[in-house]
Length: 235
Image 1: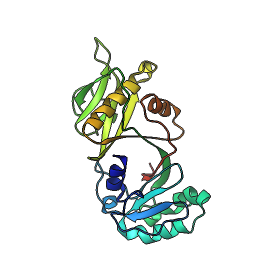
Image 2: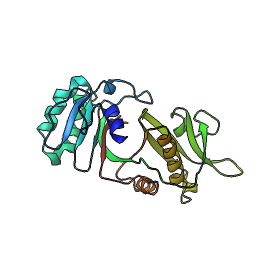
Image 3: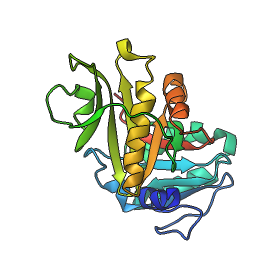
Image 4: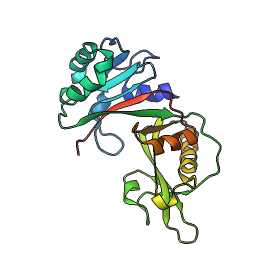
């Protein structure tokens, strides 16, 4: 299921024959591919001009617009493995036409068998009353945990539908509600919904975000050494 998602999201994945124009594999095992998806709006209407995933051995795919393949592949192939993140950070944004953006690397986790855990929260329309602003951009329903009696918002999950085959989980908890296990229960409930729809649940976070890492592990999303590589606006 994960392979299917990565092939759709990135345009290719090493375990199968490439489905997009592919440049030679660099010594690090990072293959640069051109995908039309890098020129199309993502789930929230924004753009993602560069997107990559690598496994614990550094093997994987970096997906860029088709017109940028040769330049990016040449850069990757000419760069020593230990310097790749630094060089991509300095030069990749300009090579894909977004010099103002920032290249980053995060932790990539997934789970095809969510943990059995007591449910928390209820699914509510993301444009409904009492929904916090950070959850409103998510399409459809969001998962909300509220204070019994008052109905005050405590924690929530939004789903990023990157593709019908893969959905990313985003979770947030109010400070006063932390320590109750709400985040892990919301994440596992959301993950079960994603798996029931025959997609793979994805959990991404900054390597420095230890709180998010703890939630991921407690929810059945282990850190297997995989990484996400992408561009973000320089805000």
